[in-house]
Length: 117
Image (tube, rainbow, N blue to C red; front, side, top):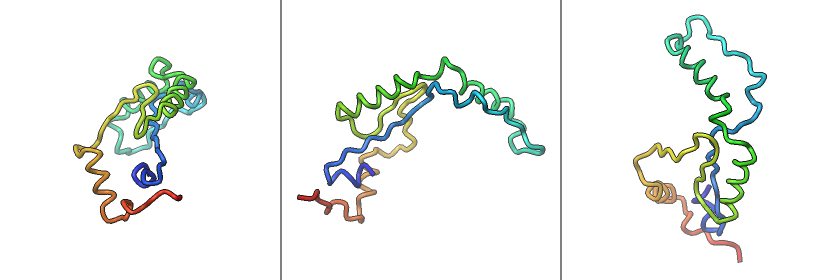
């Protein structure tokens, strides 16, 4: 969307939110491993990861996350912004984002889009 809206002068921000201290896990049931699960060997690690997600130390306060996102938007930051516990710019591709943008735009006519007068 960032690439598609840029010719119209619209900035798009993608909030990459990490762990936020909410009550989402307060009433969550303990996961049950199905019989003959493919995950049997990893089950203890899965349960441990579940517990770590609910740990307050790893979670950022919701107000702090919201203020950070709004602050970045007000400063004119575009693209990806990272807020919350353990939020980090993990890039999953070795290709530079600009190159991905060029490939995305190529053949789609986005270079011909102009903002309304």
